Image (cartoon, rainbow, N blue to C red; front, side):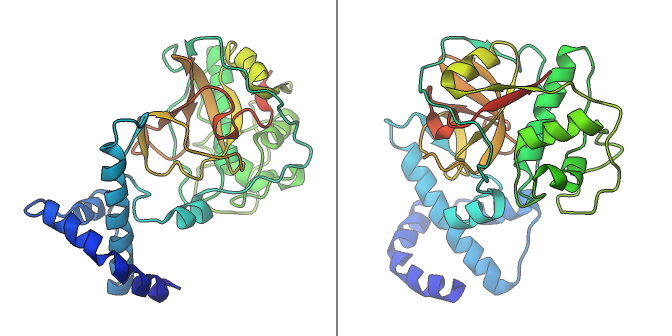
Amino acid sequence: MRKELLVASLVSLAILAAYYSSHEGKTDAFEEWKGKFGVSWAPEEEAYRRLIFEKNLINIEKHNSDSTQTYKMGVNQFSIFTTEEFATRFLTPMPLVGVPKGDDTMEPNVDVDWTAKGMVSPVKNQGQCGSCWAFSATGVLESFWLSKGTNLSVSEQQLVDCTRPQGNQGCNGGWPYSALTYVKANGITTEAAYPYVAKDQTCKVQGGAYKINGYISYTGCNGLTNGISNGPVSVTVDATNWSPYKSGVFSNCGGSINHAVLLVGVVGGNWKIKNSWGTTWGEAGFIRLNQGNTCGLCAYAGVYPN
């Protein structure tokens, strides 16, 4: 398949030649990327990754030169992947059984940023494991406990390893509400006690000292608007086109739910989201989404512990 792509890509040589001409004398951006992220490959794989990187760079520069766009794109850890590869490696289509649907697209009518209030824990990085649901769950738990005066970093890996009885599938996906169901019954331990390794394991430690009574569901954009007034909310989205996002207000997406994140505010009428792809992505790990049901944000119920 990769060889076929390389052959098919010959038709793009004219475009790449123009790119090289316009960048003559500048440092090789691909070599800079390799140095920054500490990556190397065998020669054939490197040629393939360079080709994708340079095509992505052309798209980034074309997009950013368009003054009508509401957001900027940039080079990050995903710049060596095609859109299809990115979706396969980092996103997980969410099984929708038993999840309440939202049914409205009302614009948010509040203005709150829980990061500015100190109620949001630092951005983490899920790596190449489809555990976004676990990070969304720990994010909302950590915000909940911050609101009670307790600063914790709890274990995503425990949720990955131990919540299959609740219906989650480890690195192959899951739902934050199922993770919270586990924490209600068993508690959760700290990240230090059960470190993240970004892969499926057998459950090493069941439960922990930190428990919740349950969770509240917020359905639709109206519900999320009410929920975010009280604190960050665990939500799900379509993140298929998010990989090159750098800054601004994003709306280039559909509604095929494949990612879980943390809604942390409404700023200037736009949703503010904390992601789990590290701080080299987006606005130091955050993204702003256009108001309404952008990226399917309101399509399924958000949850918050109690």
